[in-house]
Length: 114
Image (cartoon, rainbow, N blue to C red; front, top):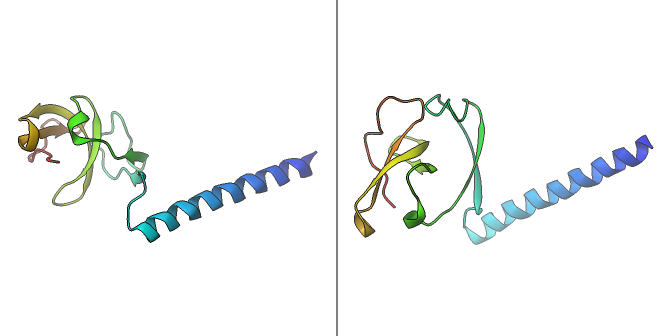
């Protein structure tokens, strides 16, 4: 009985390994990022939602479909940031997302653009 369980776990681990290697190979060959990415939360700016060292899974979305309340990950000048959209200004090419960490008192200094 235990042998069957161990064999099942080994097969599952092998399947997961094959999937991971396949995804990494796809990204390498096509020079495109995977449709989802994994990030580690480094600070406490979102501690009300994500504790530091949490793992967040991020997928690509259409910039125009983002709305107030959504949590986004974006590149700032200094680092990768995961914060909540507090407000949206402008339209089209002038659309800007005003973001803020759930645990921060102030909004982020620079609005996010597409």
